[in-house]
Amino acid sequence: MSQIRRQSILSTVLVYAGFAAGFVNTYLFTRQGSPFSPSQYAMTSIFLAVGNLMYAFSSLGMVSVVYKFYPYYKDNLPQKKIDLMGWSILFSLMGFLLMMAGAFIFKDLIVQKFAGNSPLFLQYFRWIFPFAFGILFFSLFEAFGWNIRQSVFTTFLRELFFKGLITILILLLSVRVISDFDSFIKWYSLTFGFTALILMLYLIYKNAFSITLKLSQVTRKFYKKIRAMALLSYLSSIVYMVANFIDMLIIMSLLGTTEAGIYSLGLVIGSLVQAPQRGAIAAAIPVVSQAWKDKEYEKIQRIYHRSGLNLLIGGLAIFFLVWMSYTDIVNTFHLQPAYLTSLWVFFFIGLARVVDMGTGINSQIISTSAHWRFEVVAGIIVLLIIIPVDYMLIKRIGIVGAGIATLFSALLFNLLRIIFLYRKFRMYPFSWKMALSIIVAVGCYGISYYLFRSYTGFVAIASRSLVFIILFAGATMFFQISPDIAPVLQTLRKRVTGRK
Image 1 (cartoon, helix red, strand yellow):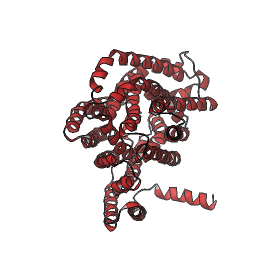
Image 2: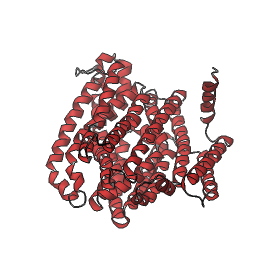
Image 3: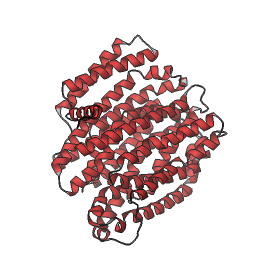
Image 4: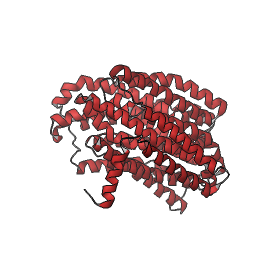
């Protein structure tokens, strides 16, 4: 656990730094006097949504194959004879070409669905292709980076470097070095590709970039399993991406890009709640994958339980800190008034992220096990239910309906995973300490909010936040809710004092 804890802490620090950069970008996009309208701001989120969908259709399951099978290659072959990277790149290129052909074939349908309410999306649709290409190869190289235990650097690139590039583009537009939004969005389309290039050069530096198409003994041995997993993981990836981004597409189709931009703000701030999970996943996946290979089931259960508890504590803290001051944040930092309507979008999406975190890394445990097919089946079930629910709620109550649908999806998906892991392996993430952490968080929120409910502005934000942090951190340590807090504090104390 110490290795995971260290990697997770470092990755989480970088994730939060990335979120800080992301919020700087969000502020620059949404502030009063910004050169971006809500519709133009929406285009950056639409690029991410559609780019990830294109990545899902292009990957052909190769990213999941790398996560699952790389330990077998590493344990049985010298680096120069590992052919997994070569075949992964080749199939990813083939998948990308097929996806482009599919987009061309269905061009008329795309125009029909979005011409009425989202003409800006159609204007820049072709520029999403280089953006998606960057996502595809960054994700592929990231999988290799995680497996050679370089999750900290890959997290830096995804969470901080990429967002730093966007900050530079925004500033260049603000001072008119970039002349207009048309130029901005075209440069924006190249940012993920440049980030992928940096990661590729880093893998070369680490002697972890070997391209060969000569079939190795490992590929010959596991060919049928790799083929089966690639197919089902491909379907799973498509299902996952559609489930995560269908709301944005429906909003664009029914309500237009302006409403999509307002929804994007609630989505972006809601993603802050999930920040600790992203670092934990990056650190835990290679360890869990190796544990399955070595049949260390108790270790997996321990990681499952600890991850759920620790991530729930972090998620609850962030959710309540943001929720109690959301309106003050929008007003105090002078965001455009239209973005106030994203309040309840954040509430439901934030709760969905808390649900995801409180159930631990169940998805990653299943996807790295011999029963990874379950993720596909569960994903299809959830998708078939959530698409009509999403459409109905958005049509009736607007963008808040998309938030409600996201929470419903998270509850259903995680319930299926929990039941599966318990019935198959008797693994479960819950304990009485989770209930205690929820009670403590709600109590601290109530005290912090009502003490300063008559205040507004920065004073209200700072006062509520400070009191909540002191109360929640103090109660968490007093009740010893997490066994990982003491080792972390001890390590920090040693670093500060210089003791060994």
